[in-house]
Amino acid sequence: MSSLSDLSLLRVLRLIRVVRSLRVIRVLRYAHNLRSLRLMMGALAESTVPLFWAALIVCLITYVFAVIFMQAVVVYTETPGASWDLVRYSEKYFGTLPLAVITLFSAATGGVSWWEVANHWIEIGWFYGGLFVFYIFFMVLAAMNIV
Image (cartoon, rainbow, N blue to C red; front, side):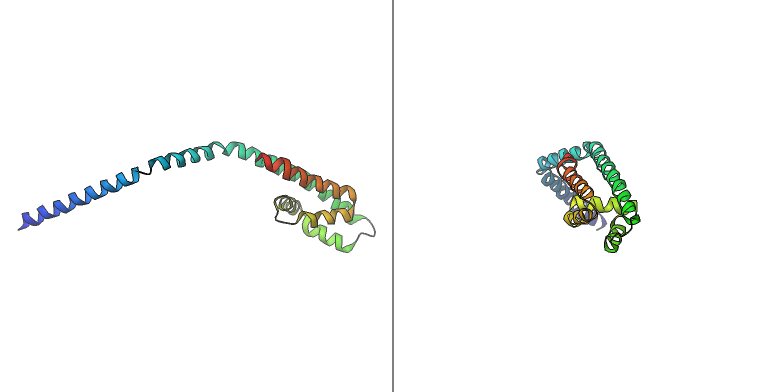
């Protein structure tokens, strides 16, 4: 009786192996789709170095403008008769270098309304308002389209 149960167990194991091989054949029907996926993954892997350099350029441009606008905040807060609301707004969004970078990046990418920030700079001075609009123009039309 033991040999009979061993024989039926072997048959079941063979049947399982056949079913598994049929599953592999079914997956092979989609191999042409996997080629496209492989091609897309290769393109993503090849674009990492240019993406790094483009992101570095965006970060450098944002950093330079953040330093310029922080300097403007310092000059404005030290002038006698400066509007307390503008000083508070300036310190909230441009009080530190990381805050200035995040505010500029958010304004360029749509996280913060760029017009709200531009109005703030226009109230401080037309030069800084125009410089901020130039920053947005440059980032949206030039730097972001490179990426």
